[in-house]
Amino acid sequence: MSGKLEVNDIRVSYPLKSQLKAAVNGVSFSLESGQIGCLLGASGSGKTTVLRSIAGFEPIEQGTITIDGELMTSANQRIPPEDRHVGMMFQDYALFPHLDVKSNVGFGLRRLKPQTREERVDLLLELVGLSDLSGRYPHELSGGQQQRVALARSLAPDPDILLLDEPFSNLDLDTREHLASELREILKQTQHTALMVTHNHDEAFAMADYVGFMADGKLVHWGTVKTMRQFAKKSGAQ
Image (cartoon, rainbow, N blue to C red; front, side, top):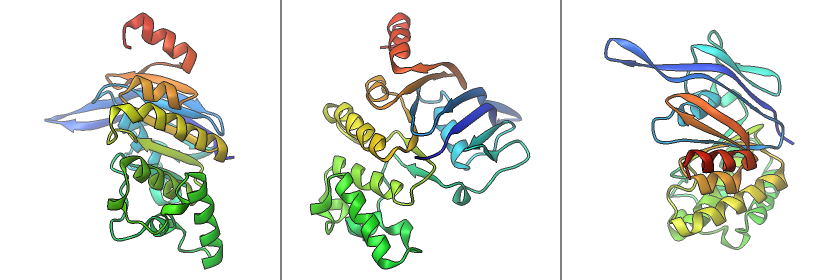
């Protein structure tokens, strides 16, 4: 099982003209090991900035981010992204077009012995249902299949935390909720802690254990899917 994530009172600002503007301000939440969370909000709400801060791509001005009790980021310290043992799944999947499915999945495992690497890749391809497509290239796959390859590649190094940036945005509306449920099932099987950002309520509720609503750089509400469904209904957000 992967790590516990704790985000405590973080603030991130960007320069705007002659002053700093807070993109994220006072955001706090936590995920226990094996839980799936989702930050839900409109474009510009700050959700992606939180994700990038956890990954180590953005510095923070205040607060702390810890994984399994180890400090990753504070105002005075930032462990580099490559040393955080955090997996990242991007919205465009970022697959290597010149590599087949098997090579894409195994790309981050080059330090392993060949047999160990092959066994790990085969296991993940079976998990995401792509064993029979291992020799195909990204352009030969559907959007949903590319997403599964990206997921398998993100899980290959067995990260402590998996971060997902709008993972369904390139898929048609009819398949998004179905694939969110499928992705949730895979993550529950592997017992990975995961945090996703999206602007789509259906994806968030199909995928997560906990959902947070973000607006104007603040985390307005954070709670279980059941609680957040009720909040969304009352606020007319759904």
